[in-house]
Length: 233
Image 1 (cartoon, rainbow, N blue to C red):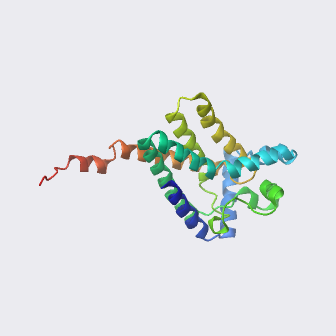
Image 2 (image 1 turned 60 degrees about the vertical axis):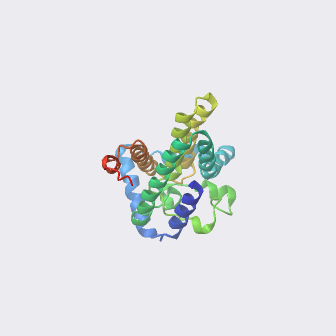
Image 3 (image 1 turned 90 degrees about the horizontal axis):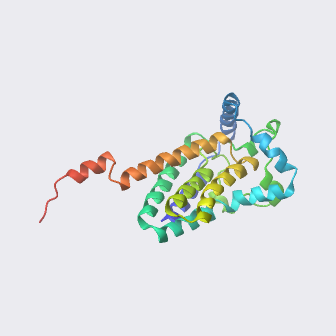
C-alpha cells in the first residue's frame, strides 16, 4: 500500500508543469520572508560543506539514500511490529502526500540550487554525481516541487513512528538523529529552504492528527456514523 501510494504520488508530481519564472519569483519571496524572520542561514550552512569533499558526499548520501529507502524500510518494520499503528501512519503519509501535490500544482517554487547565481547556492549533488540527480526515474522528477518539503516531512514522520513504537535505545536514537541529519543535508545540498521544511513538517503533523482522530473514532463523521442504529436482519 505504501509503495503503491508513493509511486502514484511521484508519478503525479513528475507530471506537473514546471513554470520556471513563477517558481523562481515565489522562492525569491521565500528568501525575503526568511530574511525578515532572521532564519535565512542556508548559504552559511553550505559554506563549510563546499570546502570539504567528505562532508559533501555525506550530505549527498543522506539526502539521496535517507529518504525513500528509509521510508519503505520503516513501513515494513511497522507493518510487522504493530499493524494498527501502521495504518495510522500510512494514512498520515497518504494525506500529507495529497496535500503536497496541491501545493506543487498551484504554488510551484524553485529549490535553492535552481535560484539565480547571485544568491550563492551550489548544487552539491550535481558536483559529485554529474549524471543523475536522484535515484528515481525521470518521469518521477519535478525540479520545481519544493513546497512543501515532504522529503523532510516524511522522514520526520518515520522518526515519530519509530519513537512511539520502540523502546530500543538504538532505534530511538535513530528516530531523533535521522530527521536532524536530513534537515541538515537538505539545507547544505541546496535542495530546500528552511521554510519549505517547516511547511512540510506542519502538513505531516496535521495529517497525523487527522489520522489519529480517524483511528480513535474522534472524527465528527465517524462519531455520527457510530451512533446510527444498525438494522439487523
